[in-house]
Amino acid sequence: MEIPGKTAVERFCVLVATAFGTTLSAPFAPGTFGSWPGVFAAVALCLFPWQMQVAVCAVLAVAAVLVCHVANRVLGGHDDGRISADEWMLYPIGVLGLPLLSNWWLIPVTFVVIRVCDIVKPPPARYFDRTVKGGFGIVIDDFTAQLYALGINWLIFWFCAKG
Image 1 (spheres, rainbow, N blue to C red):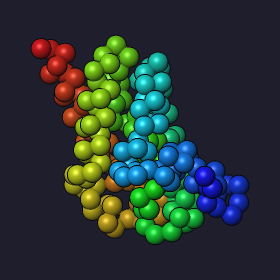
Image 2: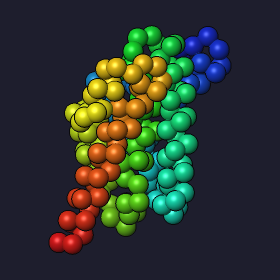
Image 3: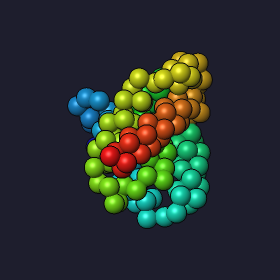
Image 4: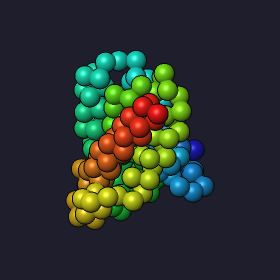
């Protein structure tokens, strides 16, 4: 598979932005296919205290803006469907602090919640998706959706842990 881009930096950004090439050949639902690296990142982050998780999430969010900006320029158009760095690099935000390692049932549940929030784009995410351009525009709607998902995921965990 040929990774688009004229320079090594462009090809690297496209590779990361397309979930390591996964979404370049995804038969359908590229955002869902492209979210899987985020699941692994989120599980790995569970090994660290929540403060470290927050710091890593912040770094990933900033990196996603940069990667998406370059990949969007290379692939053309606004928020090309093959770009999924906004999904996978922000995925850990939707599970911040949740004990995924000791509650494996949370992994598929949180995945569904995160995907639904990304697809539905509750306010103001849909507004951001339509109006903000460039790498920041690609990422800000997903960041907003992840905050919704984080709240919903914690509510699900809290209710299920109490029951």
